[in-house]
Length: 262
Image (cartoon, rainbow, N blue to C red; front, side, top):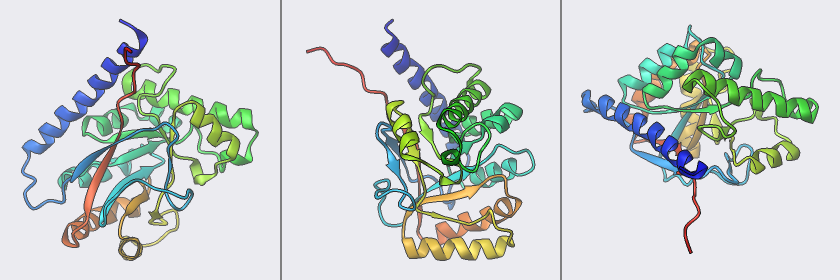
């Protein structure tokens, strides 16, 4: 079997596992729950999305949102986030730190088993990658990807299983964006965030993010599954999304393109 064919089989096996998990999740009664309205296959090649950082974002309809969580997995908070998402039959995307993934492989595998997408957020979360030497920044990115894939799947290859990346602190540089583009790794910013790096009550955070979302109308939302206030706020947030007619879109990598015979 050719290397390209192997990559397709591997990708399909990962997707099948996610689909089976989704079917199992669908076996629970999701009546009256928020749910996941659709799955969007995203081509990572040349991808740079999120209007807080780039001129364009994902092709979302009005009142469609993509839920993303950074910095995990963390034992004290990530399980509560996963529980809230499962209760509402919702799938999200987690941009994980390599050292956290290596320390908590069971939590990382749980995220995948429950149908979520796991992307990458560097090895050590420097603030920021753009502020350290280029070679060290690239090394931190690559170490993180390898640590994530090894923790999640038992091994890492030359290409990440999920070629999605988010810069810590959104600290990108033109050179690092070019590097990731050449690697075929898509870069995600955000369209709005909960500012949950600032201490506040869950109630204050809920009001803040809902006001921002109602103003934006759609978009990629940034949370942190390492924040206790976010974990406590999330059930009410998901309930309010349903009540206000918002719909959740789950993002996955598009199938890799293969050469066709002439």
